[in-house]
Amino acid sequence: MATSIFKKVIQETNEYERTPIPAKSLKSSSSFLGMYAGEHTAGTEFVIGPLFVAHGVAAGDLILGLLIGNLLAVLSWALITAPIATQNRLTLYYQLERIVGKRLVAGYNLINALMFCFLAGSMIAVSATAVGIPFGLEMPTLTDWMPRTSGWIITVILMGAVITLVAIQGYSYVARFANLMAPWMILIFIGAGLIGLSQLGVNSWDSLISISNEVIWTGIPLEGMSKFTIWHIIFFAWFVNMAMHIGMSDLTILRYARSWKYGFLSFAGMYIGHFLAWIASGILYSVFLQANSASSAFAPGEIAFQTAGIAGAVCVVVAGWTTANPTIYRAGLALQGILPKTATWKITAIVGGITSIAACFPALVMKLLDFVALYGLLLMPMGAVIFADFYFAKRFGFQSEQALSNQVHFSVPAFLAWTLTLLICLGLNLVYGVEIFFLGLPGWFIAVFIFVGLSRVYYSRSKLSLS
Amino acid sequence: MKLFLKTGSLIGLLLTMSPPILIFLGKIDLDTTKLLMTVGMVAWFSTAPFWINKKVDVG
Image (cartoon, rainbow over all chains, first blue to last red; front, side):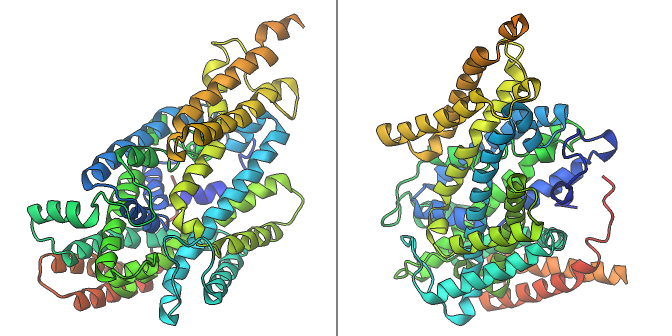
C-alpha cells in the first residue's frame, strides 16, 4: 500500500492524464501516510546523514535544525501544494501546460529528466559501495569527483545495466518490492543507529549528550569540507524536496487526496526519513570514522556493513535500487512527454544509459547535498508560477491559465519568470556568495513577483477585454 | 498458510529490531547482533513477499 498512489500515478498513461481525478478514485489517508514514510526513507538518507557529520554540524544545531526545517517542509506541502492539488486535481504537467504552454513544458521536462538521471545515478553509486564489498572494490573518498578505478566503473555500469533492464520490464515489480522492503528498511535504519550508539559507548542520557557533542556531531568539519550551521540544516531539510512541495511536482500525487489536510501527512516522511534516518546514518558514519581514522573513504555500503553486518549492506543495496528504479521511470516519463512517439522501452534504455554513465562519477554522491539543492532550485520557479496563477490572477487582474486561454504554446511571462529567477539566483551566488541552500526562498518570491508583473503586462484582463 | 507467513514476517522484524536494543543494553555482543539481524532479514525476505502485496488497495 505504501507506494500504491505513486504506482497508480506512473502506471496511468491515459486515465486522468488530462482530466481531474473523479471522486471515486480518491485515496485514503493511510495510503498517503505509507507512501510518504516509504518514499522518504530511501537510499539518499544513507548519504545525507554522513555528509552532515563531514560538514561539521554541531549536535544541537542538527536536532533543532531538523525539527524546524522538517516542520517548514510539512507546512509547505500542506499549505502550498495540497490546496491547489485538491482543488484542480490535475497532474503537474497538465496544470503547467495550461499556464505556460506546451513548448515550455517540453523544456521543463527535459531538465526534469536530466535531474532524475543524475539522482538515479547517485543511487546506483551508493548501491555499488555495498555490492563492491565482497570483491574488495576500492571505495571513493569524500574529495573524489572522478572514478578511481576501472573496477568501480565496471561495477557501476553492470549495476546500471541490471537496474535498467528491470526498469524496462515495467515499474510494478520494483514498486511491489519497494513496498514490502519499506518496514524492514525503516527498522534497519533505527536499529543500526542504536548499534552505532552502543559502539560509541553510549549507556546513559549523560553519555548520549556528551558523545553526540564530542564524537558524532563535533561542530568541526572534516578536512576539505565547508562548515554547516543550524541555518544550513534548517534550509536543507526544508528544501531537500523543494521540487516536490513549492516546486509543485507533488500536485500529481496529492490530486488523489480527499482533503488538502492530507498534505500534513508528509510529516511521516519528514520525521522518519529526514529526521530519524539522517541521525542514524550520521551515527553510523561516526562509528566508521572512529574505527578507520586513517581512511578517507566515503562508502555508505561499507559504513552500514561495519555496524549492521550483512543486513546493513543489503539495506544499502535495496535502498539505492528502490530509489534509482522509480527515478529512472520518472525520467522516462518526463522524456516521453517530449518524444511521445518513441517506444517506452527505448526511452527507458536511453535514460538508463545516461544514468549509468552519471553513476561512474562519485562527485554525484560526494556533492549530493549541493545537487539536490540545485535540482530543486532549477524546477522551483515553475511551482511559483503555478502558485501565482492560482492565487493572484484575479487579485492582480491577469488571465488565469494564460496559455490555454489564448491558445499559445509558449508563455513569455512564465519563461522570463523561470530564467530571470535562475539568473538572479546565480548572481546572488557568484557576486554575493549566497550558498545554494539559501537561494530557494528568495528565488520563489522573485519568480512570483516577475510572473505576476509580466502577466499584468502581457495578459492583463482589462487589455484583453478591450481587444 | 497465511498465518504461518505472517508469523514468519513478524519474527523477521523482531529479529531486526530486538538485537540492536539488546546490544544497546549490553546483553549481547556485536557479532551476535549482526547474525540475528541477518536471520531476521532472511525471515522477512522469504515470507513478506507472499502476503504483503496480496491485499487489494481499495483506497
